Amino acid sequence: MVVLVGAGPGDPGLITVKGLSCLKACDAVVYDSLSSEQLLAAARPDCRKVYVGKRAGRHSMKQEEINRLLVELGKEGLYVVRLKGGDPFVFGRGGEEALALAAEGIPYEIIPGVTSAVAVPECAGIPVTHRSLSRSFHVITGHTKGAEGGLPPEFGQVAALPGTLVFLMGLNSLPAIVEGLLKAGRPQSLPAAVIENGTLENARTVRGCLGDIQGKVLEAGLHTPAIIVAGEAAALDLSCKSGRPLGGVRVGITGTASFRERLGALLNSLGAKVECAGAMEVNSHADSPEMEGGLRAAFPV
Image 1 (cartoon, rainbow, N blue to C red):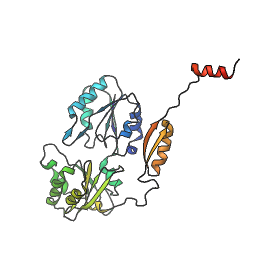
Image 2: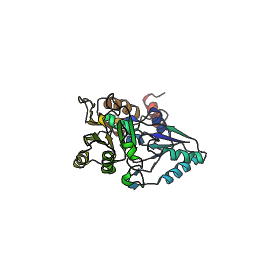
Image 3: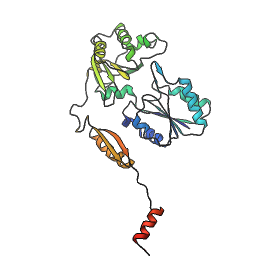
Image 4: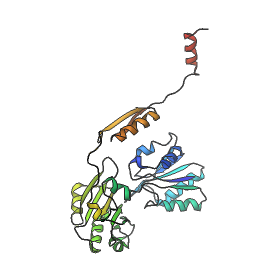
């Protein structure tokens, strides 16, 4: 069968328990450019890993080809995980993959993921809803194929909606987004923010308003992946400023898998960025000829 697993917004710790369990058990994993190396390392050593990464303007494999690949792997009788950034059904084209599998009679399961539309602003200290400021939020794609400026045809209607507007995959369309919001009647003073590499250690947030956000983003040199937030709630910064004892520190650990998991969890809780510097295994030689010979030499009968 094929399992469509939402990997979450970037931080490997934000994958669901169920999604990680499937990843550890699968025979093959099909992953994209937003998948974490740390998550891929959780798969079995003999797991087949197939990269099909896609980003705007740089397509490694067309969606139709990905669909066929999932069908082929499923027909081989493999237990396949399709690892997708964020949530499979939030601009992740998971619906197309599910339809392709259903058409071929291949069993599949959907495991939701933490969507970046909520998690990335949240980790940057921006709540998408907040009493008296934002009673709703709307998620819009900033990259619509064939559309002018990359924006959906109904953009004018969406831009006029109250609440917080969250644009995914829209950094290259930032000028068109700002122009569209202003044409929809939003003021130049409307708070806005752009978040690069959200939820990761190297995340950066640029804050401003519709009138100056383009210049600030250009000056900061932000790159994709990035999320754009516009609305009164974007003026808030609820991120904790006290920090954790090992914040910003990289720690390499070695040991057995269970030891690394336990120590890594402790170091992560203290704010450290943990990387595996080496793996160890405990192998029994109790029944080996060398051990038997050594025991006989030490304890002659």
